[in-house]
Length: 261
Length: 261
Image (cartoon, rainbow over all chains, first blue to last red; front, side, top):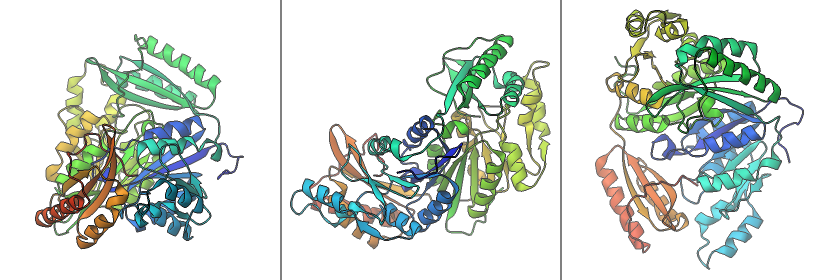
């Protein structure tokens, strides 16, 4: 089942991270990067991420805004058994459908717990919006779900990843997004002019410049991203020539990457 | 200078992370958590985060939406010297003012570079929206800036942090947001009912439940957050009694925290 038409040239996605614990700084998100890389491989561009609190009105408003604006919407967080897990109910409200029990999940979960332990809180995890399909995973018996173009995933990274890995066949994407990086011990300000000229020459390639600091030396990673392997290779060759013309030699990509200044 | 009135009971903030490198998964954001914790100490609630690409139209639209909706807006990224650094220009467009040279910054930067090295790309970093004030920092000579309730910070974490640390006196906040955590080797589904009842009893305290896995054992961290120390202590005492009533004993907070399921 695919949520988007297969005839487009670019497929877009938005991730909605639902969780007070991210906004308070208690927890460092570990899901954005995983999803971003997977989507890139699958030819889907992650165009926006929103982190929002566990507030129903906010979830409803945000999901309705982004599901209209992007081909795919992914959410993480809020599908556990406690009172602050309100994602399924909020998504059902956003779509305008009821929350209904998913009988197969109910039977599977009931079979796992000892008598009396499959309580109301745990049963809550068997409810999905009417018309949705579950997203199973190898780590946890409680599933995520898909309804329309909205994919609702767990927040626990190991479960979120297992769910994400099952989605390949549900998503229609374009060509994989490829990247080439040239890292050099040159300041951004020295490369800027030549790099801007290269960007103008290859408008279909997304070119970014990212400073790094490693082993006591500053440098810059120049990243080229695009879907056409041939033009990416050409641009990469010209970029290497550019930095050599400035007296530098490409160095291995730093393991700990700098962020954009 | 303060961007918000000092008479409110809650002060809200939104962080806009500007950077293709975050959306592509190349770089893991390291700024959200730092800002969130600082704002909490200063009595400002981070209510939303958006990660958006280096596209002027998107930056303008996002900044205009969130600066109207929150007391404070912080942006990170896109204030360096290369062609993909378009944040200052986009913010000026969003506010509806010109980008003008900040003469003091220009003089300082000019003095640092050797003759001929202070090129147009580097001079770009001296421009801020008209009416703004610079945000200096101890790490880099290139400043961020504030205009109205929008604070534009670097994306490189060391520089972002140094800039953030200077903002204490520019922000009006409420009471610091305090938290108490009870971690136990109990499943969320076992605690859910009692924890929900506690939340109902203390509506002003934000209660969240976060599973963790440590040294081969699953457990749950129960987090209470609020601004009133006395009620936080009372709720914490009742929570400890609750988990003991379920046959568990609080354990030290796990260093590696689980994310919300």
